[in-house]
Image 1 (cartoon, rainbow, N blue to C red):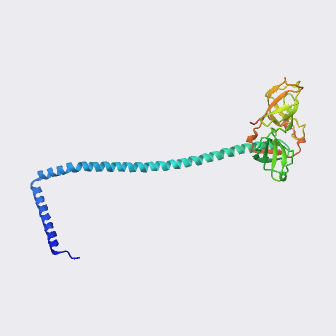
Image 2: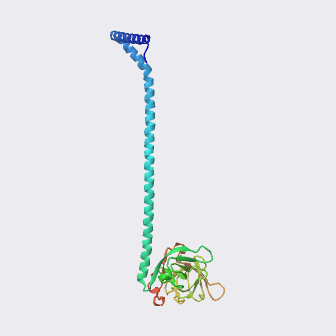
Image 3: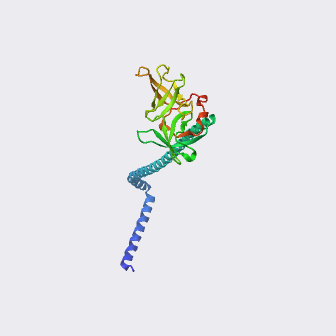
Length: 288
């Protein structure tokens, strides 16, 4: 698009005038330096606050940005540390579980090596959910040689006996069950009785005559006379004795040695129990 001639003339005229003014100011400044310094100072007084404000704003924005970046970095590092801590806690938990399991299996192996009887180790896979019976389920059955009535132990301690046996699993009637009855013996005085479960951690030792001397803290073991449990397995300790009860027998409460709710692994005695006397290998230990 063509520019009109009068506009070109006007542009040239303005440019020439600005050039002349610039030359004039340059010449004047060179002849009057004091006036130049005064003008520069005046301009600096006007511009300085603006520069200072701009610098403050710049520093503030820079500080906020750096703080944000630093905070973001700290948060990211914190997330990494928390993730690492969680991983270490999981590793520690697994190591503790392996340690506990290793100890439990070593105890079972030591027990198996200390007696000459065939055994089958089984893991507990379930607990009876009702209040009517005290039973647990294990992951072994008749395919593994298990039969109803076989005794179940945890080391040298009585757990119960097999009540139901399937192909690959079985139920164990615990010593704490109401229907459980175990021929028992007071280890110190040799007084005999029948240990009857009550559904709790306290069982009742029945049919101990008042003439027999028994005391709180005495250990109760299996007598082997019921044909189910071999002699000498640890059952529990006497918790209370009442000789003033009616009748011929003492009222004796026995605290069972095992906490059945914590059972994880048990051992079924599948061999001939008549050939084993655990009282010769029972070392006096008890398990809570």
